[in-house]
Image (cartoon, rainbow, N blue to C red):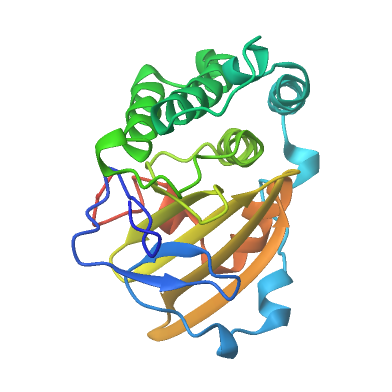
Length: 239
């Protein structure tokens, strides 16, 4: 994997997409490079009341989110548990990172469909493919992946995102429906940075922002996020 690009493996067809850059040099996947200089800061943090507000989160979902946080704090990676102190090879680093996020996923896998779980595991394997890996690239960070899992539990999307990695090892998830695109970088400590472009009443709107994962759906509410997450309201059916 080149230092200028991120890998993308998903059920979404990204054959016509281009690679653009966040201001902090994070690579992300999108079909058109949104002009962040024209994005309204007010629009990026405006949240309308929605069914995904914190008060509407079920006790079960809240418990799962806390469980992921607990696992992140108390479950060490295979490399950390090794009694041998030495520099790992590229293959070992990739195996270690893949195992760590799969263990994290397995703890909540019973709350996902088998189709979702298998798809996610397959995408993780593709992201860390040794044959296309550059020694200077950074595998996915467990803290970033934990934030992604929490967002999935909050939103319960029906459609799979395309997945990629930033230069810092943060997980990047992209949903595309026609010309409507949502790209999200999941950060440590339950935070997510996002950029979107969509058509509203014949006009193209762009917005970007950063929030906690529990407020992610609320921040997307003005743009009808079901266009990205729901199969029923997705006429393109790329999932």
